[in-house]
Length: 451
Image (tube, rainbow, N blue to C red; front, side, top):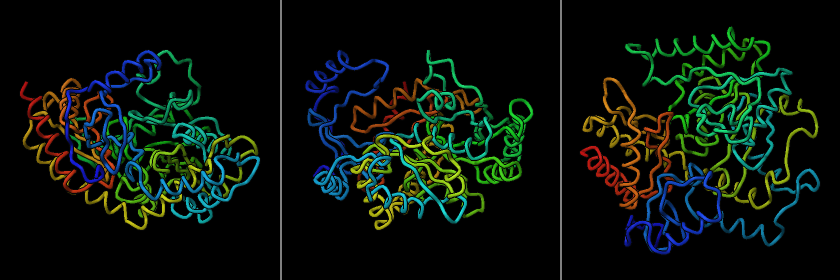
């Protein structure tokens, strides 16, 4: 069974069938979408997929965080089939369907935002969720500006490209909207030399406070938006003490704290949402966005906030045609049921214990491994040319990714300098598969670092 299989490469990559399809892709699909991989999937189960040539891969990318519950979760498949027999779609603005309401009720139950009474709206992608969160914050506060951070990724719409730090994702796409200002994210690994963690957090809060002097007054700022664990930025967790300080700034000045959990949500962090760590510490966000793993691969995203915030929004300004499409909603409802029943956060914590044990050993073993970090099973390994200078080594990461793929392990780079390998393996991975992946990655590091 593919779900229990181990990586196995039977043809040079790409195989003949895959090459033929990739050649067709080059003729039919814009190059701007991009691909760095030689695999053409035929079917997937659990943490594994098989390509059209019979090669079997362990997937540590998981659709970039979409497949926390795994490929082809049988119960989600059945839920979608059952809904498809009734109807595909009914636009919620026109005809109410109960699955939207059920899903909103479930989100209001499990999402850790401030307030006892919550409300949730649905759209289709993480970009849309983040853009709507900004719209909600602006409408509620009556203020125009937002603050985002270095290393941030929030999407590819015009507004979310502006919010995104890495402008490689926005080449030739300007001009960009006004009212978006950027502060320095607390990357403890790359904090100014010699600082303790406490000193570094004070430094980064000071950099945030400077934005209110140099860019937007407090009373013109609607929201501070950040990822609890930066994704494209290099899997950098926001330190809890920094989050507490951001929460205080927001409380003191009537600013909305918005957590983008598009990538780090849905059990990945060791809790259902990373913001639960904040709620437990008394610094829950005002608004939370989520997408990716919400519906096991069906297109869906959500914005949740307390009722008074959501109900302040002008009628007709939020929503969309496909938000919580009936089949996506059916899948999402099943995701919540399965993740709670099977304790997916505990799976993430177990994976993190095993993975971080190996990653930290590599930090001692390899001169090229500069840092390992993460929250739960959202883990990153940062590669450098020199541990003292911390000079990024993106070329080495690119070679490791290709080497591992040729052995049956799918990896992906991340980070401002493309020198971090991210871990987003489906949380249903078996222990045997996890060990096989760690062994492949270690051998790839050894072989490429020796060149």
